[in-house]
Image 1 (cartoon, rainbow, N blue to C red):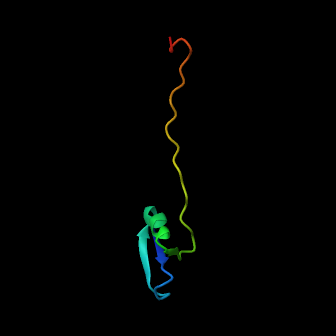
Image 2: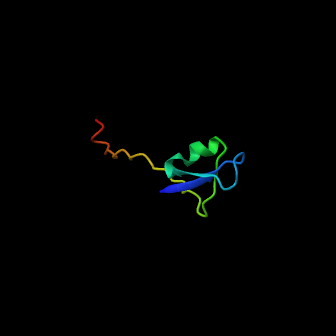
Image 3: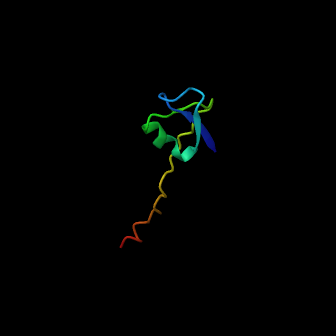
Length: 58
């Protein structure tokens, strides 16, 4: 999904379109999201390790 962004030092009508994965990097460089919907912040949990019964640990 593409997200529109603008930079405060550029004209207001000058925007760029970046992928949602790149939004955080652009925000660190001063770019601001101009879309009505802000990008979703998602995190993925690591895979859980299978539980072992006490007998398996012997």
